[in-house]
Image 1 (cartoon, one colour):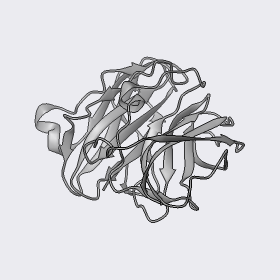
Image 2: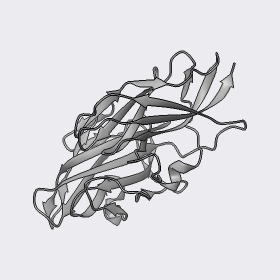
Image 3: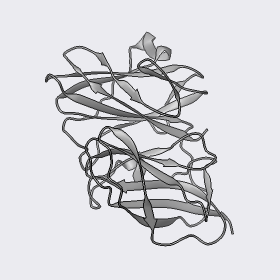
Image 4: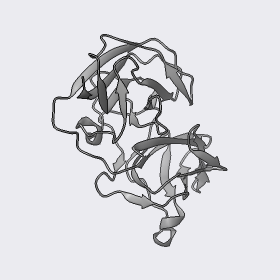
Length: 247
């Protein structure tokens, strides 16, 4: 397993916990929870929403200590720059095979929607020795609000013949929350927070290169990109960071 990004969303209750709904098509969904398919780690979480007051991760494995809070919240309609989120990185929380993962949220205002993204998977790995390349592309697809949209990307060039490790990616989307890579033959969909403008600053965890273990692509079959956005918009730019394996 590399890592996978799961989005939860829902209308939070004022002053009391309300379970958010998983927006997920890969992992098994059971009610308001997602079943983690193998031994993994919770790597990080971000939360965004008008009047959001409290967000907690619901994991039976940690209920003896209380459901872990997401401490850094974005209290507005979209992500900000620099990005505020919790990243557990190299000290992540273990989550056992088939353990359910849910999210509880409260707000200070009525009828407000809260969106939470959670990263689960293996611990981050440094990339192998060698140069990291960045490929730039433009997008023209309109995102559907509060859902994943597979966006069509026109890449400026094609890498030379060979196999490449995925290092990371980045999507510029004014109303986006996360983007995920869809790589043929790969079960998980590793994601990153989107940024509202090309000059915006992402979280430090995604600003430095670290590889996605075992995630590779061939030069003639670049990864697809899907974006979860809070309102209809057109992501303008996509960047793919990669490293040659052979070729």
